[in-house]
Image (cartoon, rainbow, N blue to C red; front, side, top):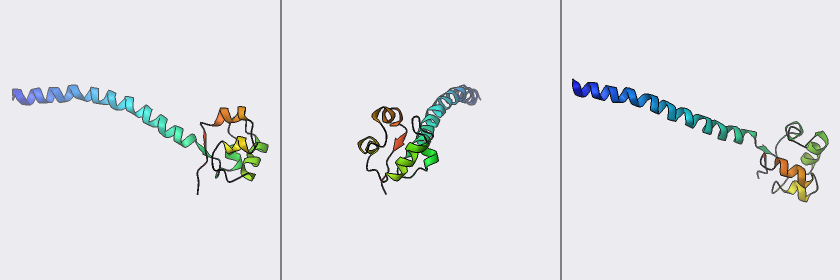
Length: 99
């Protein structure tokens, strides 16, 4: 009986620790998923989606769509669609997927 009580006490004490660990892991996982969700594919996004990026308005968004396809995201600067300063602001939010 004493052994069972000790095991139950150990299990009960372990629960809050496991709960704390799991709670700490959830925000990190949610942040990673959120970051992936926020990345915009410049080869597939609509002009409206592109226009949500900082420094990309309606005119630049339409120019991005017109200049497709892009092999790399920095093609936006190489093709003079957007200036380097705007690219520097959005480069972490965009991707140029192939296919």
